[in-house]
Image (cartoon, rainbow, N blue to C red; front, side, top):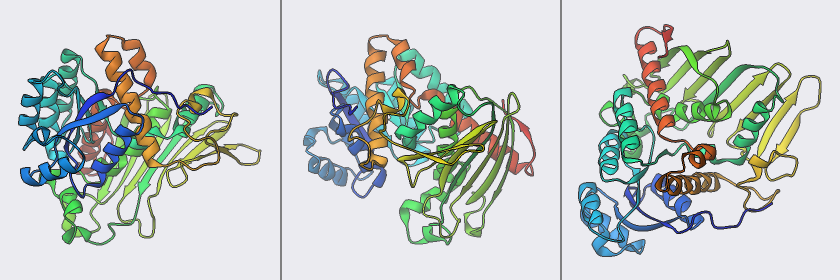
Length: 390
């Protein structure tokens, strides 16, 4: 059944920091937030250049006086207004996320932040404590988690359709950075600079996406220990890696493997998650997001299609256009954004149970992503050795 109803009681007054003209990720945030009338863009600090940011904001029909030169001014001035912002999205380089997120929470704002949330577990846990104190939602844009068949996989696993879970294989391995493209591309250059990207490149930028997808499908799994090996095949990127392998041992004996790469020459995207059980497996590939491959041992392969009545009801909640019509990344992001909006409304009325039922990538997902990268780097820098996870 197509779900066309409005999701929230009134659009949430919303601003963005960063995501100005030419920003691919900024466009993704705006398209996702505005699609279901869950948010209304009323303010922003869109660019490090105030004049350029103001001009861009006005082109989005934001009032000139609400196009601010920087995020401290944005938060301070909006707090003075009766119709001030209720939430903010952060679409800036990694090194700025912690400071902006902290300032937003201190201003009592709900936050939607690009990953990584910050660079260290200590910082992440500090943001979690602040979010709890201020009773604010922090959403992290693991956008692929909004695809409908991720929820189908989760329900199949929970229902025992795969049997006892044994292995989880994850990858995000494209080939677009097989050469030093960052020398001529500013949007890539900062991603391989430790001052702006943090302690990793593909581990933090790519690997955390399939890692979270596996977490969404298998919320009960907890890593016991891991081993990481990382490489810089384009030597100028060292000490940051452009390729990495991670082995994970989960509590209870489940094993995991993750390959992250920006030098998988010829691959367009290469993000896949395969969950292997004692009687069957499921596999999702982001280049074919409307299909979930279901393989039962001894039976023909089945391809489950988005929007079909044979799926679990939870996998049909986000259906927009019916089966057969292809949906993509903007729909996935929109699914997350409207759930973020519902979580914000629920938090404002104190309904924690409703928030938990939404299954959003929240502050806990942000903390866990930072913890995973930190442990991977620790293992790799010690010579690719097993390290205890907690």
